Length: 453
Ligand code: GLU
Image (cartoon, rainbow, N blue to C red; front, side, top):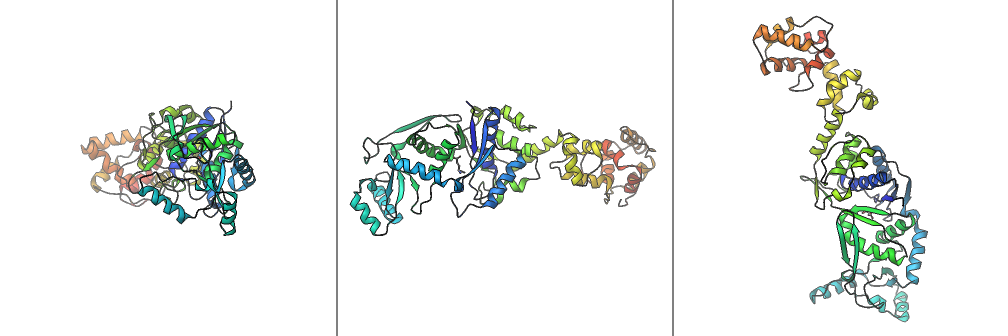
């Protein structure tokens, strides 16, 4: 059986690393198992959803290297939801309710005060036709609740009723439908709620596996009941723990903190590897393609404990990724940054950058103008006098520094550090063995003399 997966963001904000993790796990699962992948935009909340957010989500996913087989928008599927709702109504599983929020709140408080669980008491199920007609005459408009399959007779009091599934991450799971209120599926204004639309979509798009955050575990109990009420077998579920942000940052789509769009200076595969492997028992490594990463995916290795997202850790992974990146993979982007020097320059600097843009700083150090840092002019003067004649190559640095060492007696840091400061104006950086020939004799002489060049 071909697996069909989906990622279903609501376009009401930016993708952040938390929901990106959900996206990546679904995508990799589909890829690993030869399945299909649907991007579904859960835009039933018309007020908060926007096409601009939807486009940003698509753009973020494309940047990461996603290619989806299909896209669907819930706002375009109302007719299907109407049909499914009609089916549930005909079966007596969707019933009209007329309580106002205030009435429900009063009831809830009474229940709590008398030590009863605050679940909806199904009063509306007991209304007669005449009572309904009267409420409608009063101007009340129905909202519709799904009667959970948790009692022996239609309007009966809920009884403990276990819904069970074998979760690919959490193992055997149960939800007691008897402890839940019948959920509202259609609001009084006729709009549908996610609990319902998601199930109709999952049925219509033949979704076989749903990987999502553990904040949906209770929903899953309800949705499994809905799948059955609609005559469909539920998909396989996997619920991962949520990512928490470190420090004061917030993992929320309304706080821009963790938005992917502000991390576009990172390498897509470093980001994908990080979100796929964080919170698993596997080592976090930067893999070089989605295929390779998919090969690593094993949902049974995903931890049920919350994983902490750490931007510094991600940046370190990005650096590791760049260190192993061949020139041909970044040639175009380097050119766009105004960085030349081909393979030799890239190989010299890639071990010292965290993000690709930093290559441009080293390009300036090598070919642009910098103000050298002079610690000991006399020492540098001696060193300048010993600079070998060109052409320069791989051994120039050691020939030169050996000569400086013999002439001055300086060694170790006392020998190398002043030279580095003069030649690059930086405390640390790529190996001077590689940089010196790129800087060239003229520039080196000027810098050793303390001239900006
Ligand atoms: N739009 C829902 C969310 O973002 C989708 C959840 C699901 O995968 O079913 O939480």
